[in-house]
Image (cartoon, rainbow, N blue to C red):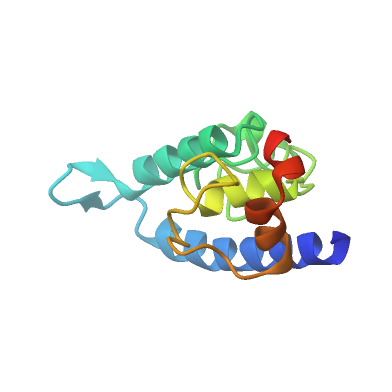
Length: 133
């Protein structure tokens, strides 16, 4: 299970970095019809991921205050890392809460409306003992 978690985090981080770089390039543009910039949207998405994960602040928008940027040297945040440029860790249940987009790793939804098919996902959905984690 440990290596599956590392794989999930690696895939998530890689995809996230590519998307965040593309969004950064358009950061000041307003998103119609909302009249909100791309930068503002990324902050909203990060807040939602933190809320769904129920694990504190482990994700930040693509623009952050200098003190929260990598080693306090930049305001850009292509990879969501701590001030020492270390990746935040996530438990399998935190990942599943975010992927299912409902804050519950035991209920289907979000990106996987029919459920994820990996071993970790199946264990959370089918094991009553894990429902209380």
